[in-house]
Structure formats: C-alpha cells, structure tokens
Image 1 (cartoon, rainbow, N blue to C red):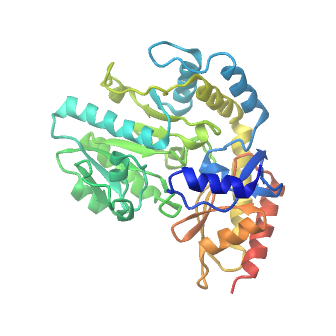
Image 2 (image 1 turned 90 degrees about the vertical axis):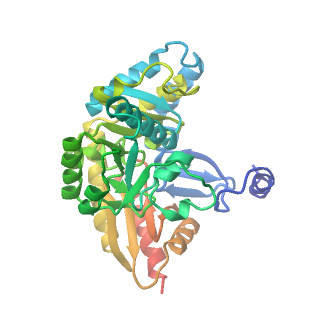
Length: 393
C-alpha cells in the first residue's frame, strides 16, 4: 500500500467533507494502529468511540466472520436469531422493553424523535410534537438530527429545517421549564456533551428535568450514542445519574467496529409503534448484531471495573501535566482544556507525530480510547502527552 497513492485517489474520488490527517491506517491490533509505512500509533480515538474492544479483538473477529459465512443479510421481512438475541440482552441490561435497530447514531436519534412524536400525537393530538434539546448538543447530521443539534454552526446552508424544535441552555432549568409548553412531547439530551466539548451535565439539573418531565408526561430521550456501552464506566451513563429515560439511543461502541444504531424504549412508547411506522433495510443486520453480541459478552463487571480503574489513573495523570487547566467528561470520555494559549488542534497534530492518536472537541483535546486499555497504555499516553506539552510555549 502506497501512502501517496491512497491519499491521491481519495482526494480524486471521495467527497471532500472531512479534514483528514495525512495518515493512511492499514491495520490494527488491540490498542495499536499501523499506517501504510509501518509506523505504529497508540490509538486513543477508537474510531471516535467505535472500537470499544480495540482493533480486531479475537472473539469479535470470530463472531463476525462466523456470521458472515453463515447469513450476511435477509432484510426485516424475515426473522433471524442475532437481532432478537441482541435485543433481549440490551433490554435486560438497561431495564427498557423494546429495541429498534438502525445503522448509526443519527438514525437512532431520528428514530427516537419519531417514536416520541408517535406516542405524543397518538395520546394528546397532532399539535403535541415539539422536541426540546440543549444548547451545545450534537445529535447527528440528518436534517432532523441536525435540527435537534443545539449548535448554530451546524445549521448553515441546509435549510429549511424540520419544525418544532427548541433549544435551552444546559443546566438552566428555568429556561427549560419556560420552553416546555402544552405542545412539548420530549426533552432530548446527552448526559455528557461530546462534540460540544466533553462537558457533563450537573446531576441535580438532570434530576429536576426528569421529575418535571414525569409530571407533564413529556418523554425523556437520552442520546447515549457516545456515552453508552461502557464508555463512562457504567453500561449507560444514565446509571451515574440514577436516571430512567423513556428512550435511549446507542450506536458507536455497540458494534465494536461495524455500523449499528439502537433505539431502546419503555413499553409505554413501544406500544405505539406498529408495522409500517418505522423501518430500515439494514437495521438488525445479522453480521452487525453478531459483532454487538461479542461486545456485550466481553462487557462484564470485571471489564467495567477495568474501565473505571484506567479512567481514574488517566484523569489523575492528565491533571498533573503542564498547561492542563481542566479535565472534563466521565470515565473514558475525556476532555482536556489547556491554558497559556495552547490550541488543542496543535497538540493533536504533535501527538500524532509522536505516535499517539487523539481527537479534538471544540477547544479541547478529546480522548476516547478503546475500553480494553491497560495501565501501561495509560502510562505511555501520559508520557507522550507530557513530552508534547513540555515543548509548548
């Protein structure tokens, strides 16, 4: 594989919608990615939170390969075993009652909005369809989820947008209470705003929102596309907040590297979704579900204990690094704010040259390592970051 040729071909034929690093990743194993020139990188991005078990985890590879060699696709006109098995595991793990499978986080959030509106319109009438989201949120890039995203920067050039979305500042309960009128059907939120800078919501605020919504029969939708499936040290970030939403969305880490999204909901909502009310040709694909089952099989109490231990060490180490002003987020969803005028984008580029892959979110450096990381991996990442930051002026 020739790096220059791959990049040139990509630039010639793929739509220029990504600001890519000039790196061609060719293979990976565990925490390590290797480029086309043989250089190794310690990966603290996991494909933006997707490779929850790292690269090519043996159990995941076996499960995916075996299913691909058995039945790769049928459509939802027929039953298959993997999607039902995965749905059962997810419901038992989360306490919710039913699942709709799609292919991405955006699709999952789109489905959640449809489910919420279907329940509310059936129950209260056509006008009750407004969805409130939080300023600084990010929910996807379809037109509806782009509209739900509470950041103006994403709203340019793509209008007109679907109607009846409203936005309130995260943490401002009075603003939410004021915005929630008789036509409000749902409040949709991320418990840690990922693309918005890796900022966790305040627990008291979340509790007040949940209680208010219960009183008004406004559905609570929690977008766990990035926070879910062990990322924060619990299977769902909701568990940190003792929150029991009506609808939860999952994607990213659920498939371990294959595209899958899931909308989980309680019975109250599920009872309103009938044949023809929603669909997806690839939703519940057997190979993707086999990969997700392998992820869930690995994610036992010991696995989550390791996530919490590594997160604690990583966060403590980051706080001691030069120029670090704040460490935000939850678990292994980490944001790093710098002082002294240091730009996260510059730190990311320097880390890449030094063999550490990291991300950015607004003005912060963002770390989303695979959940299998060891104490040595944490130590190596901290050492590279220290070396990079010590050279910053």
